[in-house]
Length: 101
Image (cartoon, rainbow, N blue to C red; front, side, top):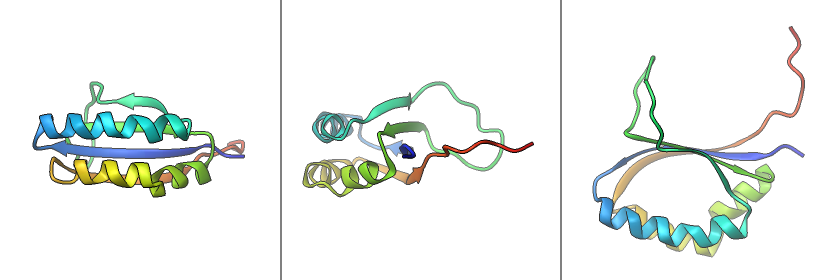
């Protein structure tokens, strides 16, 4: 079963309100087995456009990543995030195959 990932790029307008969102998202992330692989580290945009903050979150499966997004707990957290930030979020299935060269 392929893992699932959230790929997030965010601009935060109100850090104090965004902190409330981060506290609220801890419950659903724990419930659905989320693991942060990237969380606002140093980066260089070498092509295209970017936002100020980048996050990659791993879930045990693509379906669980979707379930977390759709959960009532995360939907409550979103309401805290929306007035404090602008973001792009993609939920994507991981690749379990082999690369043929």
